[in-house]
Amino acid sequence: MSRENRSKYAILGFLDLAPMSGYDVKKFAAYSLAHFWNEDYGHIYPTLRALEAEGLAVKTTEAGQGKPDRHVYVITDTGRAALSDWLAATPLKANLRVELLLKVFFGSRIETKRFREMLNAESEASERALRELRETGFHLEKEVAAGGERGREALFQRMSLRYGIKYYEATRDWCRETMEDL
Image 1: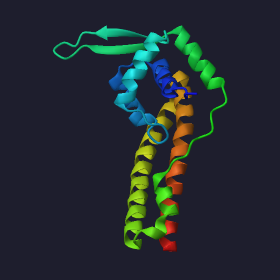
Image 2: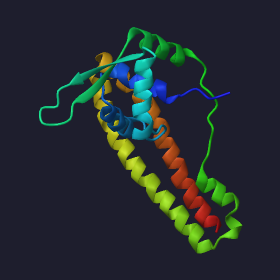
Image 3: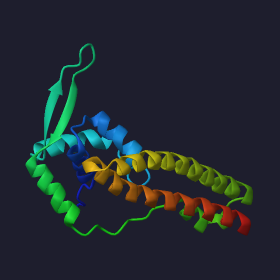
């Protein structure tokens, strides 16, 4: 039995916020969801085409004025209903796959120096992610304070952002503790 394409709902959610092109979806996903959900171009465009084929979105074309035409997708009422149904359903259990932890599990088979390098790199990557998330959080706080519909959206986006902050703080701290164990 094949698994349902969950990206479809992420993209429907984006389109529910605003009409978007594939490029817009990628840019928005990188800015807003990267700490817990990844979308790449190779998956975005086929998903947009599938949403259109299913009647969940419609494509409009904007003339490119010296550039290629821009294909913008807009969620339909049917798409909005599908998104609402998915949002109301119980989420699937996360399928955790962390390559670093797999390497830690078998870590006795590599040199301690290399193991420390991997942990240090992961700790530094977590610090970079924390800086980015905190910057995003600063902007979300302003939007929450402004109120209105966008403030309400920002409130929920801030909730997911807090998870990302906790995740990267925990990863950074775990890397430091693990290096001490060595």
